[in-house]
Length: 71
Image (tube, one colour):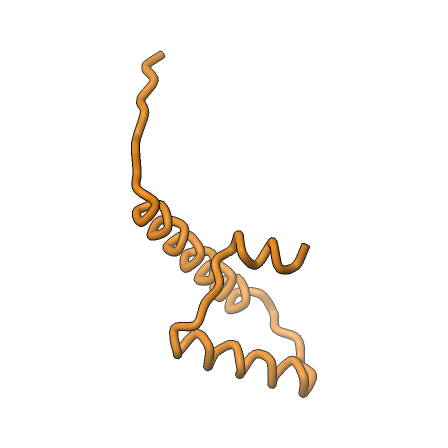
C-alpha cells in the first residue's frame, strides 16, 4: 500500500470547505425539488424568503460554524 501526504494551505482548505458547503446546499435544493413538498406556514415562508435573500447577497456560514452555533 502506498501512502501519500498532501499539504494544503489554510486558504486552500477554506476554499475546499466552502465549496463543500455549496455542494451540500445544492444537494438539499435537489432533494427538496424531487420530494413532494408540503405547505409552508407563513413563518416558514418568511424565513425561506429571508434565507434566499441572504444567499443572493452572498451571506453564508460554513458548516463547522453552524454546528458550533447550534451545539
